[in-house]
View 1 (cartoon, rainbow, N blue to C red):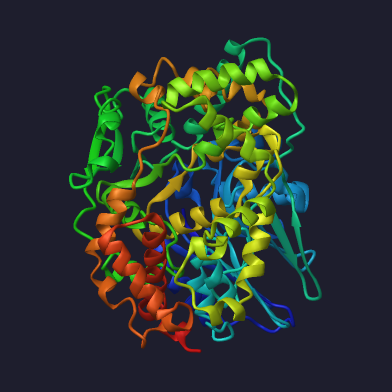
View 2: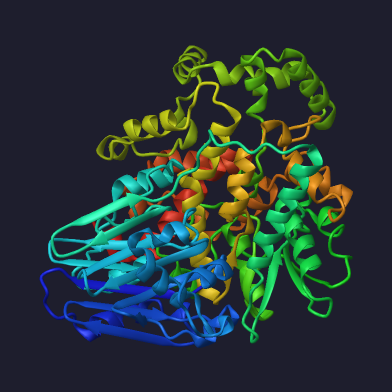
Length: 628
């Protein structure tokens, strides 16, 4: 992880050095190991370095090569392949990833991103074309924000770097606030500021004096298939690709260490056991786990401790039970330039803090694992649709034993519901007197704000985009991989890890693994009543059986509700003088709080959490943004 900024005056006027410096100062926490700038007529690039790979000690960004200048937050995972293809004479161990990008751009131009595998967000100044080229990785692991007006284009790893420019106003985007309060994530371009946009995952943008051209350079193709000869062949290939994904993310600077999160679930446990298997025997693998003495239904030590006895694993347990859902630290308020959306944000913060205190410069994490390996539940309606009814019955019968539920319940939930149009579901809600989707998601919204921001139409469109009538299993998996929620999650995780100088790395975002997983038959993903069958079978010799055959995740409701109940700000949530009054109904907030304190529900808890998160962001982090 590192940070970068880019500033381009499209009129050709000189870019002031103090402007670039102020942008870098806003993100200096991303680069404790050095800082650099480059300026020429009308353009400047800047970089803050965190050395998290062995080659980073040779990095001197912004990197210059043959009329090309590169600055970015870049980790390239197919280095060996690229070093063979590109005319780079230096020893591979002395070639930083930024130089690989510079040579790739010189070799392939704007198509260079199609050749890069890894996590990256970068800017390239092409002197011969007098243009700025920017790119973001396929799943949006590395964030990239930008501001564009008639005269100036600016980009950065964090929004706060753009807000350091006098020409970038801090006016909040009410539609984005509405999306946040409704947990709507499909708009991948808006940020919480009207003047700042997000470059979506798998996109590039090219900017010159006259034009801005944004394009998508990659997509998942659900029509692509991979056919191998046997179950064992699929398992071997999945294992090879997963080991490759983990190994490429174990690169670390000699001065730091790479650890891994360990929740006890399938994703993090798979990463931990494979990483331990790949590391030299004399290199310990540190694992970091959130555990809860006061929330036994959310505690996963039973599963965590089936992994940690393995020789060479150094477990670290984090007890995030002394804080509310809002971390009461100046560091938290300083670094988060958007309200946290994840209800367990406080636990991730404490876990990352422990990893940094233990000397980690990078931590592997299981994010995207559910989608990358595929639950495979889309197979069930597909079996009905294609007339394979005996196969469907066998799978429902097996699944009933696995999850201890009736076949009738599973048939209605996973098969019948896939064929019911959303408009029929909404009609049934009306006839039963149930809350409509907007009110069911957040009952505390102010009606005037709902009208002002056009939230009903936006929420309806979001639901339409995410409702496919009886989709194929592959289309359903593609949708879950590319949803805007994933990009939002990676952006939030990036801010947390950047606050502590720790790079998060996600093996399940490896495009080689993801494309293979999507292309294999759905029967490899759902089999014998088990979701995610391929990873369970492929790692059978490494995973403890207690983890390998877990049917579902552990719910975190109890841990979240306990933290929410401890939150001192909850008593003032309906204060009419706060910035929340512009967005949320005071009486509805008070009612939600009273219901939560008497008999907690997920709907009220989520609504209160979002209100608290937004309130702290508006009032404490960026108070000027709450002025209306």
